[in-house]
Length: 557
Image (cartoon, rainbow, N blue to C red):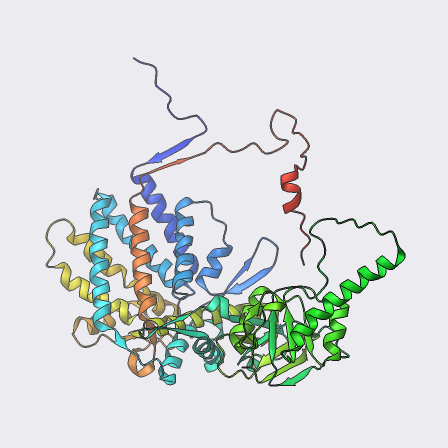
């Protein structure tokens, strides 16, 4: 006999074959079970302790999974799913995980029967194509300008969230914000950049009902010299700068040798004149408000306040861009280059208000703002964070509808329709792929089933009744009302879902299931770098090299 050949190091662990597949399926199901109860209007909240010891209370699938620290590789890739979903369409983060978990669960039976994973994947992909076709068939177009329909849609998105109890409030905020910040790209396509042009300011205190969308921008800053400058200006002319209004210092240390005492005065005079010139260049445009991203020296402040101009300094770049969008100004890099067209005149009111114990500057009542701020008030910080997350989702849904104005029924009706269509089609499929295809059809029922479970109705009865309805043509819009668990027509209850979200959910879930099924080998135990101090060698004291001395010691602004 030959001696056995060792290929892998001892520290490496290698699992292969069906063992791995079962482990992966188990792991994915565990992830799906964590957030299964957060689907639907009667959903439970999860409380998570994050690494810093803070508390997150939420039922947004993505927010929950983001905080989890998992060991299993397959489970990690499930978490990626909900993140993709959140970035792409913003809603449906829970459904995508539940669906993917279910897809893998039904595949387990076939793996036991020694089906080859590629066969299952092929059937799944076929099912995916057909299901998207079904979606196209039952989707109904919606008029984006019709406020009531939009409200219904956004409400059904938030109905499953914690803020659902505040009814139209968040939905209104979301629609206002997205319609304000929308940019027409032509051909009837609207692009809404939520991240750039919609700022959510959370101010603890007050009550949720005080939240509103400002027709303009609000910033957490006060004017530079509160006593001297006006704090309320009607129809202000706004100049936005991206340069400091102070004397330019030398690039690096500059030495000047002065022989006579008078030269020193000349130097100071030059500095003063330089600043005076800058301010005069600004004042030729008769602004009422000057905002700069950089510093503003006392002298410049004096000149400006003498001319009755309010000034705000050290503004964030993103905020400056928002103000530019809101009042129609252009951010100017050098005072010399100012033109009349760069002055923003679109704002109706500039005022500084005190909310809680901080001052906020409001630039509001803009004529045609392309950016806006959502002001959220609420009792506690946790509450505000949760409301902000829900608002993000709601705005994404509103954005999706502006982008692709098609609707599908909510309440599990879409999934059931797809499921019954796939079941009928499966009978015409020949060969071995028929069974996995049918299983995929059954997997789609996970969503309505979970909805029923979360309402606490008799799941089996409800599901059989629903399947019976969907077996007949013409009942595509029948689903579960998540609050009561009754079987109703989704059109009457106005429970909608946007087409983008559903299509993305199906695609992501099935593709992920296929990917996990095709893994047949896990090699773990990659060589870890030795932790300092644990190894046999005495660890050297870490010396900062020049390279990293700079970057980690930056003082935060």
